[in-house]
Length: 551
View 1 (cartoon, rainbow, N blue to C red):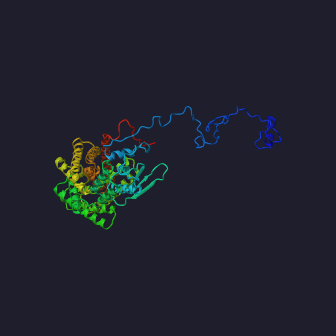
View 2 (tube, rainbow, N blue to C red; view 1 turned 45 degrees about the vertical axis):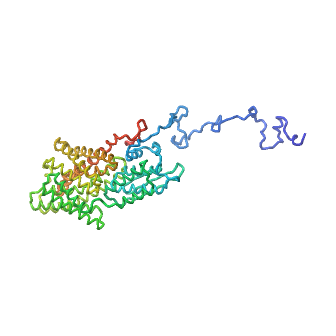
């Protein structure tokens, strides 16, 4: 027996030997349960027997992040949110226009969006994320500056990003700022870029070219590289307007003359309104050349038509001076900005809608200031302008339909539309006025209801034509609502205020605001009704997320 064996304990008594002072020795009198020589196997997540789950303190609320809810029962709880079979995959119809596919995806929650299609433009090393985001922002800038709604701009930006393989992108559009964020994965840092829109211009030819570029980018059969997309975008920016300055001035005069025919004017009134509108247009161009803001441009442009109408009243010429002033106002009313502002509000972009409507309010105040200044001096000089003349508009259906079509045609020229779209929008404007005249003059319905129905048909036909030509709907709707703009209600409201009939003036201006809202809501509703018949999402799949309803 060795010396080491002598130091080993040989019995239970030896285990409790007081001479053994090892810190691992079990004190005498402590019973250790027998385990049969094998350790007990337990899960590392199992609560040891005899250990109670700690209860939250009496003063701690039940909703604390560190406490377990009292009503929680792991045995009788609800089923898991994700079913055992998984979440059904949402897929979009391939042959639908990119505007509707991207809009449908934007209205979904991020978790429900389908996976991107096979990328056609992605390089072997992956897309250059900063360059793709820059291209996306430049395209969105042209669309927003051209008057597109915020949702359509976001849809276009989303389409460009997904065409280059950036599916985790979130565009954000406000009135003057565009931003987009891309997160490569859940663990990578996001890449964010932004761009400020400082200058706006009306050129629907450029707008149509941008839509064609986005359509080519989203087409799986068309391979457009980043360099090619940048080259085409630069060409779109450098393109000249399709109509020269003198054509725009002539179009503004013809628009005012056609509008004066709609409110009961004759040949003399037609030419007088045309001359006044052309003078106002040239003065506005002069102010713009000297850097004056648009507010003062609208104020100056509203003065010549009002001055010519007051001059007829002072000369006691048997001419409807009110029709001359009303026709001149038609060329200045910001119908395009109004429709875009209301559309943004109806689609949930309230910040952008507020900014657009505030812009419309400033333009309207500028028009009011210019016309009121001239009317005030005209009334002081003894001009006889009758506010009740609005009740005696002669009904000439064929002449008024022809005038409405001329008004839509000239409005399309002022918006710098493509020549191929001018005929369609002219016909759309004639249909709009025919429906309005049939409901208001023949059926004796409310002017607000008649305007809303006519504007709804404009939006419906505009969406139909835009899908037929794979372009934006703005060129087919904005000019067509020209005959429906509340020019006469605006003028008679201002005339009553100039003659100190403030109550009647405010009522007439409120009527003008109601007609303007009816136009904007009707156009948007017609567009949404048309989209209801489009087959964008595959049948049997999950619906898009609903918006909040006041809670």
